[in-house]
Image (cartoon, rainbow, N blue to C red):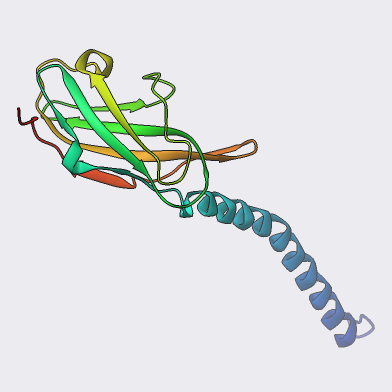
Length: 158
């Protein structure tokens, strides 16, 4: 046993440093692209604002009337998700894809939508509130953002 030697302390220290550098490089190689993707997705939604003009939105016995205003920033708006909350259920529809309605293309642009209860799949439910969220894109990337506007809605005053 006395003739057996362990590794020299200098070699052990160098090995520990090399192992540490390799581990850090592997972590960076996997974490940095993930963080960059998250930042890019967040950046897409940062300026994407679409709002419901509550004063001009209401419903009657057969239709929902909603005015949507686009914010002042320039971004690629691909669609808008409309969430209709009733006393019975919540219905989610895409303005362009599901309802075949035009979305505001330019900053500060507004569109007024008349959406039938039939299109929404509701009958005599009482609508309590509506919310919208933009779907934005950049090249091949498409991101559904958080709700940017939600408002209580009431029956139209005739």
